Length: 376
Ligand code: SF4
Ligand code: SF4
Image (cartoon, rainbow, N blue to C red; front, side, top):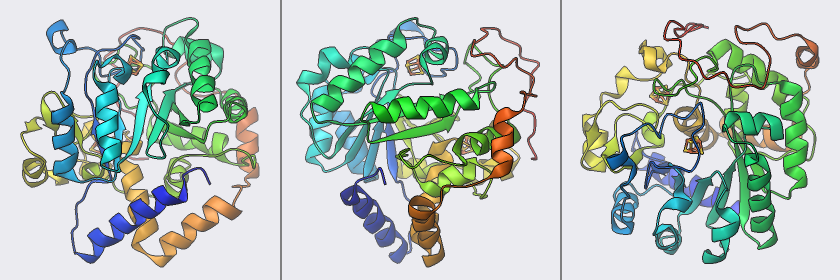
């Protein structure tokens, strides 16, 4: 089990308190984006395409603290941009630790070795390092030769200094399932606490529009990757969310479960879409037309989404919402290696999608490729 007991207890007791008080919509993790600039320019990124004057802006520590105090979520994910480029990131992290929030600082780790000495290890702080696969795959995904080696150096240094470290992997169409499984072995050998996975979201602004997965191909890929698991693989994620990715469960999106706050305010409705902003968390909750989002809504922007910020809160609520959900989580975590002979066959099958089975990221912009497999 990759998530420490103290963190699980904090989240479980928070969810139960909310449910017992009759609150239907509550956040589990604040997606705090303190800046949008980055020292990489990944082909699948939908966050760094702002004009220069926006990229120069930072949230102040006080704005970050106000956001977490407003929403009250027990966990904070700090993506970006690259948070280690924020001049006051240490102060922000220390303020969140003082509030006993479990923080996932998402970094591409290019600066991790240089900056790590400024942070103190804490059970509340995890460095979540962006690694999109084995060396060749990662370097292509982030469009930077040597990116993998720098990230691994950062991981090793952070592990050596006693920090909690996870990896954070986004998978795109054409991903080689066998290579991803070999990557899991490599990552666990680095001594990380666990791995986090997600299918890429089809950001309209991302330069490479050809590699986003439709729902059916997402399920097929994750079934191939996550069935017949090795005992040493650990995932820092809800086990039921992993089953959702494998096509074993159905969930509706819970966009309010991971609200996003950045220099524009509270983003409607989620971390991935920008349908306006609210000035306060209360305004976000009250004025967002939640029924217009999620795959079942028919909103084309949600059609192929299976991303964790919408669906992992659904899985967490399932775990703590019923004895059945809790028992399924225990079974999935402790006793189920997800044996699946059909999935073994998938590993040997040639790729049958639209994109050649190469790790190369083709930077082309073909707006004709629309969302396929919407109803699958
Ligand atoms: S490292 Fe993250 S924020 Fe930076 S370009 Fe890549 S995906 Fe975007
Ligand atoms: S389905 Fe995805 S894009 Fe749509 S609201 Fe949910 S998380 Fe956001």
